[in-house]
Amino acid sequence: MLNTLISKSNAKISEAEFRFDQLQKHFDDHNLQYAFGSEDATSIIKKIKYDSTTNTFNGFPTPLDRGVPIKEYYRTDSFDKLKLWFDSNDKASLLNVHMIQPVPSTNQSIIPSPFLLSAYGIDNTATANDILQRWWYIFNQCLQRNIRIIGFSTDADAKYVRAMRLMSGFFGSLPNFQIHQHPQAFQIKTTSHWPWFYLREQQLLLFFQDATHLVTKWRNRLLSSAAELRLGNQFISINHLYDIIHNETYTKLDHGLTKSDINPKDRQNFSSCLKLTSPDLFKILNDNNGTQGTLIYLQMLKMIVVAYIDKKTTIAELLLVKQKQLPPHVLHVHTFSSQACESIFRNTRALSGIYSTIVNFTVHDFLRRAQRLSLLNDIKFKQLNDDPVNNFVFPVHHKHRKDRQSSFTQSQSDIDQIDIEQIITDAYHEAVDMLDRLEILNLLKEKRVLGLNLLSEYVFKQLNSNSKMYDYSSQLSNTDDEEFELADDDDDDDDERADDLNMEAAMAEWLRCLTHIHKIL
Image (cartoon, rainbow, N blue to C red):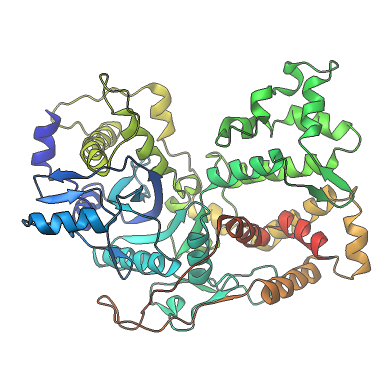
């Protein structure tokens, strides 16, 4: 039955094909307009397979043309050419996917399922400029179909961070590519007297590092045996948590921790991040001596979860909605992540079948399984919106049904009453209270930078002088808009550099600003 529905619904997915027309139909059918894009890659089985429906070979690294993969590049009727490909090209080691997360419209109570835009094999040789051009291509193609891409989310790979900083102008600049001058750019009109606002007043796209990746990396840095963390006169150490677990004064009911929660080998344990931010653990750390640094570090972890992952968090800082450039229903911040990519990776691996012990897939396997997943997700979304599809009832567990429900209840009038400046001021005073016992405030007083405006200006000068990034790539012709053009450029940053860039980008948040300022002093 699924194969019949796939053939009738035009759900066929080919390698390196961007399904913009299918995306437009999907948005029109569900009355959608806004969306958030994400991109991620995963390891795959290196294997070449023939696709009889497209007469192409899947599994080679797909060549890029201005950052965009070339569709059906490996198509031939010549055995000699096929032999040449096998002899001269490596097999793709990674699968790159692009997902589009639709933003529910005003009258929808269910968050739509992500849409698989494209998937193709890669060899991890793409540069930051390839990513820039690819995002620009996706934005323009969607805009032509009346779909407004709000922004993109990825993990913290160095080339993605570089692309984000250059496009957003966060201590980065593209002199030959003035993307912020696009007529569709958002305008933030009240930043002239905000010394703590470091972005440009015009932003065409918003960028998010995937919050789940950020949270697990924050935890892993704490568990690392090589990292020596210090905040003021206090050390940040995993030993403080070991002492609590091994202390006979406390039981598991007191702190909720187990040894597996602080196992450094388990680097993707998101549930342990939630345990490390429990109020009970915070109370124990606050009562102990010499653990204030670890307490504040975990409190900052909690704030990341609350700000970017917790679905029930009240939205009070989104200025674009306050200025009515975006409708209120786009405030589903927890969906602005690359978890849509991670989800489709997990689900396609789960479709390996009961007679197979192989938990991974090839490029060809992914494309075939993704067709079924896309169709099933569409059926499930229509059913949750009380729109039965050919009397096909898709069983949905009641817990999963709640996962897709929209929890946003704020109206435009509620958002209009938000005082952005007061929120920032309150956050600053809360940060000062947290650092009161760490001798950091005394250092700030000595340097005469204690105060919201003074500290903001000082941090800006430091980041602007030490972290400014430029890219003077020469212009190339662009088929979508000749005014905005890009070129390829090498990006030799390594993984360690990615972590450094992430820490710099997070300086816009005040708690991390204060941590960084102490290191500078």
